[in-house]
Image (cartoon, rainbow, N blue to C red; front, side, top):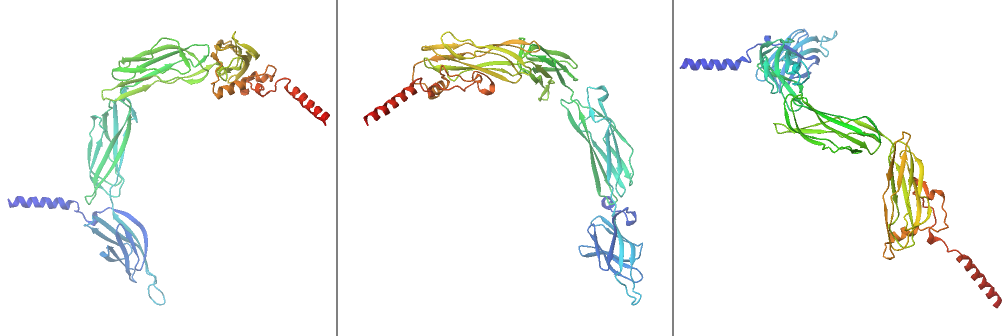
Length: 534
């Protein structure tokens, strides 16, 4: 029983002293201070220790001490080439002071030393450092490609430190990938300074993931120095894994159309993956500037086998506006077995649509007027396209009103992005309602693209009521014209910047014909009578 206890104690002691079972002769030194010049009494700090030139002797000895926290740990008289070494077993550190040069500077007259100096170099116990090389045969892997279903990993370790490493252990975290060949751990008994291990090979299965994912392969190296201290390092290699399922949507359409042409759209989908996918919801977007001509539903529910391609939609659309546009994306989505929803979008082809885009509008200041009021109708013809067009617009005067003056048609070339306006004045009849019919405008351009556009209709209410709001009265008064008032041509036929023509004189601001002359006669007669009486 006692012998077993004794052996156990011996084993524990042996384990406790293994880390420190070395001498200073076994230490691999690492230079810490290359050169320091110490005068008499000078000190230098190194790794928590104070090295001091305590004294000099004429025979070129320098008295060096190593201290810490004010306590001298070791001292000695050294000549050039000598070392003073101290092993700090409590702190687990070793330090060496080497004397490079001593200058005692003895004065020839007095024989005394004049400012002696010592140049020293210091060393600490060296430590191992690990440089890890980890490489894969490619940066990106696609499990759908046969040649990329496995991943080859190559690892090497180099001791970049200043001391030998022992009991070195390499551990690899494969980021959850299955190991096909090789080991996740390797043991190296020792690794000398600048020594590199052999290459370690590891083969991993490329995983099947639902979405593109970056995976980190982590290599960790641990090793011990002569004092039993642990040293470690870590290196990461990131690889990108393509998804196991990818839906590819392709939308095609003519790149260039004219306003009178029909665009044919086609959308297809491919399951560029490894597995069957069911319950895929597909929705196509409506083009804002084109009119759908076919009676087709632009949404579907489908399933696709791996590698299967189908045509989703085919339909025709006609442009309603010219310019450069981008088609909306078709979107497909499905819910995977992991509960996540994955969404894919098609390309968005650009379309150039050319041609004039003609619009016609007519307006007036107020739709409620009094009998015999005059009303100005303003017609505006705009070309919102990217090609010039010759436009002929004609207004129709209703039978139950009187045409006073103005222009009722336009026949001009309207440049792209420009507008032209004309206006005319009508007088309302008796109480009731009347309608100004829509303006019809026909157009044609240099490409022989032609068509017809119809404006809005104006509705009027003729009433004797005196409860019209002030704004309506003012509008009617502003639009009321005298029969003899003659504005210039711009007031009845103009481009858009002239606001439809408003340069004519308001009837309420004109003096009634003959009234001024009659007043003059009365004034002159009064002066004459007054003069006779005097």
